[in-house]
Image (cartoon, rainbow, N blue to C red):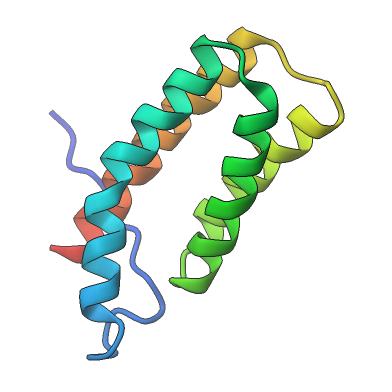
Length: 106
């Protein structure tokens, strides 16, 4: 089994941000479940709004790579250039990225 490469926030060494980063990391399971539900139930407007919010939060917490992934999905949905298969592929990418964020907090 390969080891997950950590994705570390640029604020990881900031004592003020550390509890916020832990909370953000802990919430990623719920974020994943919400993304999965929105894709499977084809709630694309809600998905677009959720990705927009999460892009901002990811950027605020110092995860620009994660923010870009959310922006990509938001753009696909906004421009109506998505399919369920494409979005499910992105869901796999989110899962991998979330694991990297969690690994960076430990």
